[in-house]
Length: 374
Image 1: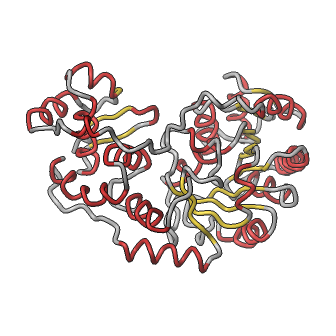
Image 2: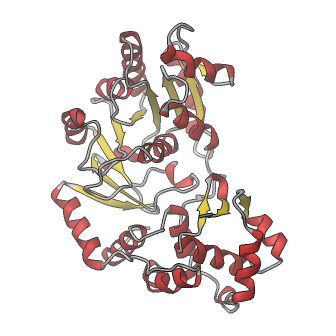
Image 3: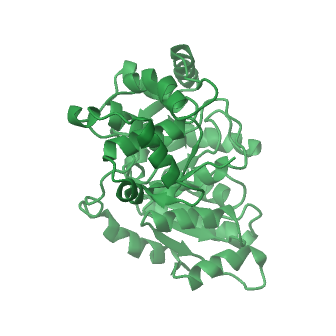
């Protein structure tokens, strides 16, 4: 499905509006049938959810300005249903509806392997990451990483010729760390691609990196972790990969090196040991069978327009009170809310949208929700 220019602008406006994340975007499209209708409904939904101030809806001019900025940077926006959108990414929970890309967009549809690790990598770690990236790349896989110092940098550099994807925590025009801007230029001007879900001009903050990490995991068939300390961002990426059903590999290291505590811990928890590229390749090859991921439903992809029958029963104040009272600070499944309240699914989902747009709902991986307290 190729988006029209009008749809692309509306999608960009919707995802850039206040309190609209990927899951909320999907639910809005599924309920109202189009981004245009959802945009019209945002102020009313937010008001009904209890917001004390008007919600900021991104303007048409804002969206056009960002599209023009993308064009000036030789970048483009790709929607989740379009051919150049990374095929595995669209299957993850909370897949971004739009991504900004710069470089060889065709590489996004190739089978990919992620390589991540320590920013303050050892010489051994950097060399081994480069060796893996080079040999896995030559076997026909794009290498995915986060453009960080250390292991990420080594993996990108070693796969410049075979193909590499740099996933950014900030806007496409805001690479981090800044000293890797020349490397990003090499990636995007050659057989590589930069990807970001963040707005142009967005400087990455600490909380943006875990969001970036889920994209690395989601795009990849498998993830290799080379040197990772306890509580490192690479372990977040590994956890994401496991949650998405991807293979997780870890390179063993010295128990005396703090940079290896996380990778050794992954091995204890069942990660696949990787001491050579064939350890990775032998497990990735079966995943390229055409029907391997055919059973996945595309959790992040907006569905077809809603059945008008589901729109006949709008929620009333009693419904809102029952749903709000059923929620608390502890995350729960939406199915539990349906069973507890015995309300129609369309009513429950619409009230959750109202609370979400009013800033009164927290969403969690796996579709869990809780009431925002305070």
